[in-house]
Length: 310
Image 1 (cartoon, rainbow, N blue to C red):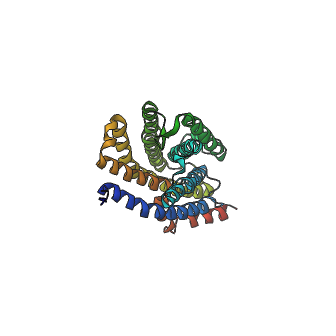
Image 2 (image 1 turned 90 degrees about the horizontal axis):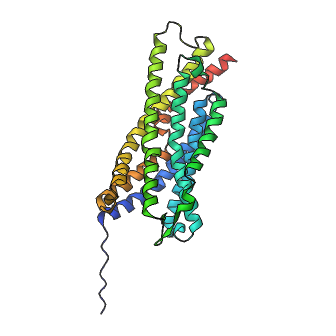
Image 3 (image 1 turned 180 degrees about the horizontal axis):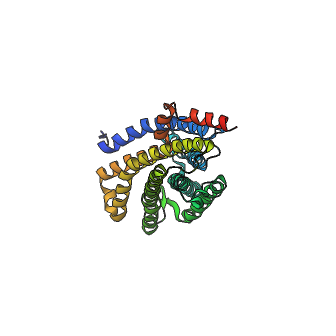
């Protein structure tokens, strides 16, 4: 008689699997709705002339790829119980490379939007001239090309080891972790904070002036639109800090001491924080979208401004 002893499943592993099974499909649905809503808003005629809107739109398109390339792939893999990255070395390299690119791009579009709001609110005419569509049309593809080049080494250093897709060795894995720590967890929040603080300072300086910049009728309407975009941006930056900071701390700890990966508790926490990061990426600008949706003075005012200036 053969004894069939059931395999014990770690409670934390089971809890995470259940969370992922229910959370990811919901996240995919909400992310799709969010992307469509953002595209409709930021492609309006009244907003297409704002470089800040173009950065928002670029982030939305990037997050759309996160949903349909990463999240959808995760759902299919879970449902089929078959991971293609474990059996195709080329697919392992390409999928890992694109995933890093998509996650790295998202915060930098927000950084560009913060920098644009700083320039547009400045009393310095030279800085205000940097807030132009021609500038955003160069910076957006430039950022994409730079990020593609920055992570190009992954195509040569990712492979299938022991049935798993990952870095070819521990040394490269640590270097990649340090690179990701700086490019995702440290630099973007620092730049967002800097430009946001400077933008607030510019706004205070504008309010002290008897005759603010762009004091014409058209300028007032433009400032109203810019103020709405600035409020949306601040909502998103706040959400970014709340959602990304815990992950950044955990990532920093794991980079300094890799032994934490062997802890089931830390592994569970890290995976949950990773799901939160995915949520933050796919729900980009959602925190800013809903307040403006229910604000009757937001986008209708912008439409009226355009009609008046015509």
